[in-house]
Image 1 (cartoon, rainbow, N blue to C red):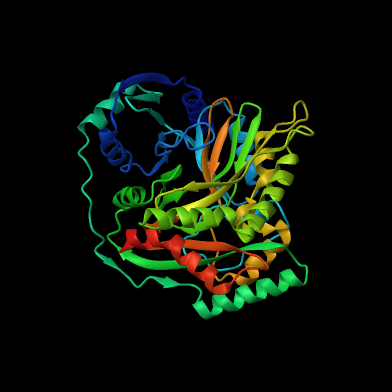
Image 2 (cartoon, rainbow, N blue to C red):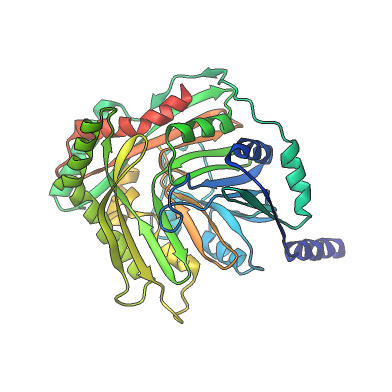
Length: 441
């Protein structure tokens, strides 16, 4: 017993150690070597803003490597995360899976899961790398020079083609998809809910899958402001998300829901026409507005009275593959009301753009109509800073890979409203799947 106690004290002393920080020269051409070094660790997380504006627009460029303290939980998950946040304050990185909803509301998840994952997992990194245009800052409990030298000696990763890709199959046939969209529309007519985000899963067995090369390929095809590349033991996330779930900066909280998608064209005039059509679409604006109202209500639970505001409504932004309609909602946090960072996240999770409205009723219908568990998809990944600010994306446009089973999975979906055309919605799903399929080809 005494030995265990001594080990606990040693671990606690290590955990409370102060990080050392040092800055080193860096250029964008060094990034592949940096990621190759990180990919050799069992736990790491890379957040990549891809050059988009850093304030509201994108992730900071951060790389977390290793885990010093951690939690992975399927019960009382928010309480455990709160405990970790109240430990000596440090960086945390991790994930919130969609099924965390079951700990917030009286809900359940009984659909089969291709790649099971805990409701929540967060990790205190051993090494933090803040990546800037001309320098990288390394924070570590050991001498940062140790890790800079390791990175300098790291060979660049050689891309390895997948040895074999099994048939990419969808959990839902087109016929079943169309039928379910009709069921959703009927439920809307009957007044059960206003809008539902309906998703389908694609799965394949891939031998010799190369997560790092796949991330680099996806990020080249579809660079996004909330891109991330993560590994939690055997599970890898390769993410090209355009959407922010929730950010806290000082006393301000920000959410940027996406609803409204249009394909792009190589012809400039046609591309501008598609962009204008998205901006003027009454259907897309109605979908977006419903979710904006839901987000306003979610943030109001954590906000000072009267501080919730829509900073931008129906903004249309152009990415490599698609045009998207994005709105920005912000609020000032309540003060001296016992509100914690956990409460702010809990009050808004899961994000309305991935459920629909009203949330609880549509989440029940999602469980009924979808054929597979969402898992990490339509959850969130992100990080906490030592001063308890945070930033989380929405896990969409993402490939999830399990190295133990060689299985890959990705979901795509769209918002179904009264005006939805089943064929159009199905084609929107395929559009969102294009870049992911290209990575797996």
